[in-house]
Length: 113
Length: 113
Image 1 (cartoon, rainbow over the protein chains, first blue to last red):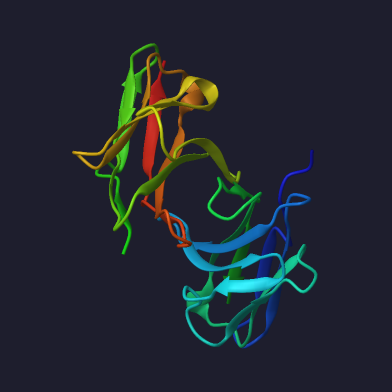
Image 2 (cartoon, rainbow over the protein chains, first blue to last red):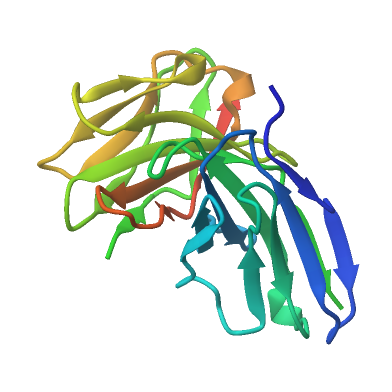
């Protein structure tokens, strides 16, 4: 079946602009996770959802970052007033149940100029 | 708090030889351990996991990993390396509670023909 998809795959934006990154999880997966991965590093947790409920947002760097999953399927990660330090690969993953193995999408490469 | 250490940035091995990619972890409770592989310009792919049961876990593409509680290790192994195994490998851990997955910084495996 279809895996996790993310869009856009690449995003270049100017400093100060808002961006919205989309994640479409595997159909029926309960949990959805957002990570940020810097070059040469492992993914770092940002936030996760069970169904539509945001369970943990402790990894969001500051209040410019927010995420939602209003219908328990597609999720959007929004970054307001982007800064150059926000440039990274943003990865989404889903799992069939909380704590199960996570399946990752291809990521969105965000570049803030 | 959970943590993962992958002590080797790079592992080089000749094709046909056995390979080992090292991982040690720290968690407050029982560990849930995972290995992922990342090929260039691709998302992370799940290889295998340890939750409970046999200490030797078998996964995709002929990989296996051995859970060693006393050494808090979960090294990834394969009896005979292939050139196509060349990629970036990530170890990850979470505890048995509802905590985020914590990744190591990754080990780049290079298999030389």
